[in-house]
Each structure stands twice: as C-alpha cells, then as structure tokens.
Image (cartoon, rainbow, N blue to C red):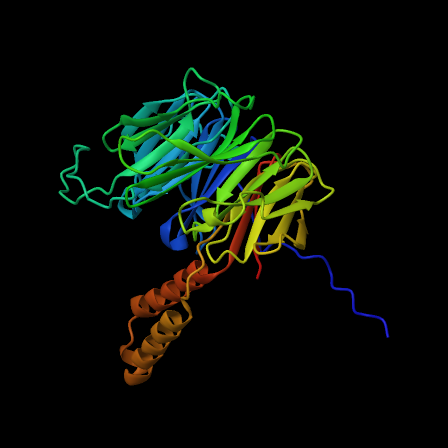
Length: 405
C-alpha cells in the first residue's frame, strides 16, 4: 500500500516591505510585533494581528546585523556603522511613526523613535550583538531622561572587542559602561569572533562563542569583577561558525557554520552539565553547507537555520534530526526567528467565553458597534500571539511567516 505524499508546506503570510536584503528578525515580547531590518539600515515593525507596518525608520547608515528588545518598549539595533542603538518604541509612540515601507521609496526623511542609548562597537567581524538580563535583577532608577519614574531592569550586551578581533566586550545598560572583557585565547588559534550568545544567572555570567576557525568556547565569570575562565572548547566545524544560540533552559547551546555541520554542546556550570564529559553532545552532518541564523524555540522542541540554498531547515532540539525543510524563497536566506511559545490556550478560551457571555446577556439592539469591533480585535490579537510563528528572512527582501509544530 503506497503512503500518501503530502504537498510541500507553504508560508502562512509573506511580508513584502524591504527593497534590500533582510538580514535580521526579532519577535518582541508578547509576540505582538515582528521587527525586520535590512542591508540599507531600515527597520520595520509589523503588527502581527494585521500583518501591516506600524513603524518604519532608518536606524543606521549601513546594514543592520542584529535586532533585540528590552522590556516592553525598547528596541535594540546593531548596525555596520559601528553603532548599537536603543530606541523607545511602545504602542503610544507608533502613532507618530511613518508607515511607508522602504520598497515604496519614502519621499522624505522619516521620523525616528526616541534614541535612548548609543554604544560605539566593533562591526568588522560581521558578528551581531548578544544580550541577556543581568543575573542580579535589581531595578535601577530611570536614567534616560524620561518623565516616567518606572525602574529599568539592566541588561548585558556582548559584542566583539574593538581592538582584539578574537576578544569580547560586555557592556552594561543603562549605565553604558564596559562591564568586562574576554581576551583572545592564547592556547588556540581561533581567528575572529563570528557569533555570540550570553546568559546570566545570579552572579554567574556565561558567554558562548563561535570563531572563524570553527572552534567554539564557553567562558564563565563566577563572581562580579572576577576574570572569565574558559571551561569548554571544541572544534566540530571545519569552516567559520555562522551562528550560535543557547537553549533557554541553560543546559546546552547549538552552533551552525559555513560547513554542513549543526552541533549541540553542553553549557558548563549553569545546571551541573559540566560534570559530564566536556565534548559536543551531538554532531549532525546535514550535507547542507552554509546554514546561519540558528534560533531555538522557547520550548526547546525545535530549532531552525537559514540556508544559503534558500531553504529553512527545522531540526529536533533533542536529537538534531531534520524534521522539516521549508522552501519558498528563491534566493539565499539570512535569518530566522521564533515567536515565544507559551500556554495561551486556557487564557484565550476564557477570554472568548467572556466575550460570548457579554453578547448573550445583552440585547442585540443595545450592543454597540464599537464593542463588536473591540471583541474582534481581541480575538485577532490573541490568535496572533498564540500562533507558533517561525519567520525567515531572505536576500530577496521578503519575510516568510510559517505556522509549524
């Protein structure tokens, strides 16, 4: 008996807004917005309920390497112009922002969000920044000049060192001070830093690094002010590492490179994994070279890579077995991003029951049109926030949105 052959998966939506290569993606907290950034320095914030832009601005003079978010209303951009910028962009600021997309050619300079911080950083490595919240969650007074007095929870930013191409600088925001330096390894010839990720827990900070030589290392600072110690080194790749990501649980991290290998490594110290033998947990020879933009979904069940061959590959987070190949783009892909997966099911069902109850208890003639519009909007927002989005960015200037697993 022949097995049924399923048709190829298709994206749920295509976002067409950039005229240049889309190089970075990021879902903001709550999955209400998707940020996209391109090789000309433009950033677009998309409303995921309506799949339309709510803010468009030129953030950098050159290509953007990375995107991030801090709290509910701060956007981080890292450009090839040697600048890392923090912008304030919450729902209240979106009304004053331009909506004309770069592909439509803005006729005049577009307004920018309020610029809160600017760090001068190294971008010669083509390596994007990595960030995490400080492991000691002590809110600082608002130092950004805002009239609001709400506290700011500090973050740590890791970028390649300005002078030492194999070294790493760690900055503190909002203080804008350099908190630590990790120097190039003297025992191993690694070449430039190519990819970074960082995680902090209480007083301990861990930095996972991928290098031009194919080596990967983990450096750990056990106490504030102490030197970083190298606790793990491996060379699963024969070519430069292109992307790296720490699993949310803090037990492992994964790497992909210009070669065809995707590897999973232990993350020492954090959860006691260091007691096991320090070697890669899993090395997968995928036969597909040039995979970058590696991201791990928050439930750790799957991870994804963007391929030079225009395909998005999805792997099991546990075994690194390939579970899906997504093809829609016609040119090479640069980045992927997962929406945060949380159990919204009960919350959504409760909200829908409350809306239905409100309508049932009121006579149809007394229900205001605005109430109906609000109810529809709530349902659309809830659906968008609960969808298992995987976004992929390509050289063709388009972003594909997939709803998988």
